[in-house]
Image 1 (cartoon, rainbow, N blue to C red):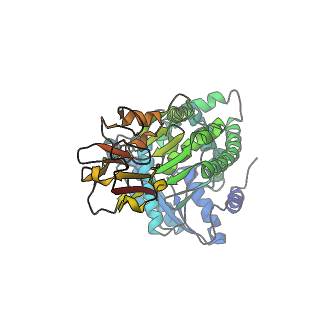
Image 2: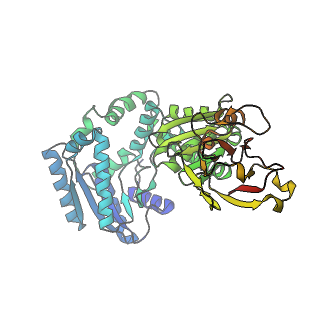
Length: 471
C-alpha cells in the first residue's frame, strides 16, 4: 500500500517536535535517493512551517570522479530549488592514514564536523539526516551480531542533541521502498553510490547478504526489528529514569570523585547495578558509557566480593575505582596522595591541613589552668608535657617503617599494622596526620591514637594542647 510520504513526515515532525516553525534546518544531502527525497519533502513542507533550508554535502574523495559528480549534482539540485548549498571537500583517505580509523568511522567523523560547522555558520537549529527504517533495522542487527546490551537495541533515535545541536531523522519510520517509489512518482533524479555494493563494508554485508538470508525465515524481519527498537526504547527510558533516581539516592559527587556505600549497591537488581556503573562512568568521563561488558562486570565484581577489603581497579587511562571496606569511590585520578610535612614552631597556634580538609589548633598553657578531667586525650585532642618535648615538632603524613609506642601498651607497633587492624581505609592511611618531635619520635596519630611519650603527669608545669577540627 502506497503512503503519502509528505503527510507522514509532517505528522512525525509535528507529533515528535522534530522541528519548530521558523527553524533554520541544514539538510545533509549525499545525492542518493534517500537524501534527495528528504530534501524534496522538507522543501514541500518548508513554506507551511516557515523553515529556511540549507543544503550541505560532503565530498569524501573516496571515489574520484564519481564523488565529484555527486557534489556537482547536489549543487545543481540546491540551485534549482533556490536553496543555499555548502560543499565540503575532505581528504578522508589522508585522514584515515593519519588517525588509523576505519573508512566509515573516519568519513562519519569528518562529515559530522562539517555539518556542525555549516549549522553554526547559518545559525541553524536542526541538522536533518535521511536515515530510514531499513537503516534502523540493519543497525540493530549489526549491534546484535557484534554484541550489545538493551540500550544498543534502541537503535538510532529520531532526534538527539550533539554539540548543542538537534539532529533529526524524519524518515526513520519510513522504508526504503516507499522512498524510492516517491522518487519515481515525482520523477526525482538521484545518484547511485557504487560503494553501496562493496562487501568490504560490514553494513553492506548485512544489507546485501544477511538480511535477505534471514528474510527466508521472517519476511517481515525489518518490521520485526523496528518493533523491537520501539519496545526497547520505552523500556530503556524507564530504566534510565530509575537509574538516575538511584544515583541521586545513594551516590554523592564531589569534583572528580563519586562515592557510594557498598551496602546500598549490593541491594540493587543486577540490571540497575550495571546501569548505575555506566551512568557514573559517563558522569565522570564523557563517553565512558560505551565500555565493554567485561569491564563493567569487573567493576561490579570488585564491589560485590565479600572477601575484598582494600583494592584499586584502573578502569581506563583516567578512571579508577577504589574500594576501602564498605566505601566505594570512582575517581578520575590515581589514588596516590602526596606526602606532606608542616613544622610546628614555638609560636605556631594553628595549621591548615588541606589533605584531610581539617585545621589543627595549637595552644600552650600552665597545667594549673586546666581542669584534670579536661586533660584526658580524645580522638581529636591530645595534651602533652611541653617541657618533655624535643622542639620543633612537625605534622606529617606516614612513612614506610613508622612505629608508634602506644600509651597503655608495652613495646611498639607499626603504624601500618595499626591502620590495618582498625580497618582504616587505604586512602585515609596516607593522609592521617602524625605528630612527631625533632628526633622523629611519633607522639600522636591524629584522630587515632597517642604515644606514651610526653604524658601530662604530677610534675608537669606547662601543657601543649593540639585539637583537630574537621571542616
